[in-house]
Image 1: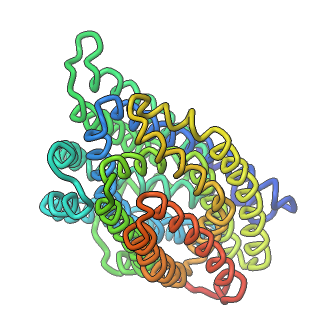
Image 2 (image 1 turned 135 degrees about the horizontal axis):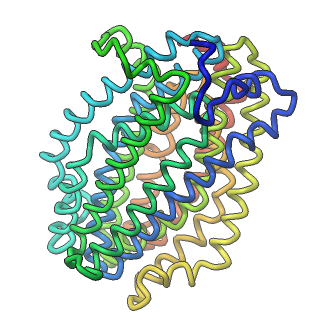
Length: 463
């Protein structure tokens, strides 16, 4: 196993660089910058998808945005597998245990397939009531359900795409996800352009076309990752032993379940946040503005995900190699780099809020005004959002996932939602009150995660 020449970015020197190089800051950037590009591609994909759909009107943008929130439930569920997988892969590679590495990957794939089928069936049944709960009605409800049902046709490839991306990041290979996401983005954008508007011989399918483009890109992306995994140093995981092992399932889920609970709580809070917006007088405009605003803001927090992924890999592999001090140093290096980059994006959002907003719905000034206010208010919290995201990634690399879940309960459910209702409904500030609540609690979340990372004993976590 150890003598096999790898074919991809996870070269024999990757582990040595992560656990042995004296240049921690340079190693963090070396790991993070391919993921920065990967996430920016993903963000551009979502942004252009929203921009294309926005040309169909506010109802279409609202329906797709709300369906995307239901889709976040799937992401929360698969987090239970992907986070556990990444932590185990990183820890076993750091400890130089290739057989355990392969088995953790194999069992995670099996667990992901099973989980995708179960969660997909449940969400198809729950899609309509969830969309209604968030404020969808009339055309937005009809379009949102249509879009979501199409997404469910590709639920298993979607799960595999996320899990296998986590596998490569656990390896310290950030190039493979970059290559795959580049292809996924091109397929999705070209598919949107051709199928939403009916260019050339293709029919004009509107929201249906957006869903087909997304599913097609996910199928291709998951297939590419399986191909690259087969050619990696751990490709043996795909060749034999395809028998479910419930002990491995439990091991993966014991790490990932708190992170999944955190993601589910975050998603549930987001849905409730949408439902509060649905109570405001400008409900349709507010929800459309939130959809556009979040997809624009993703230009900032996607780099945060990149540095979070770098922190996960470096912390996990260094703890596996018995170097907790280097793990801590790596996490801080990732956090500071991410803070600087996300702060720069925040400045861009504040200064260029209006032209960014007009790129979505140039003919609807009410939506544009709300997007502008969203971007400027949330620009203030970008450094703290970076802190929260990256230190959470570091804790996940250690397998310490319980404390971040508790922090999510505190900031999202006990503070954000009551504050949003108070500002938006009771004080009558509407959507602007909701934006203020979001920004304030993002700042609080960053400070809470800082306290957890600094004063808890996460380095001693066993997995």
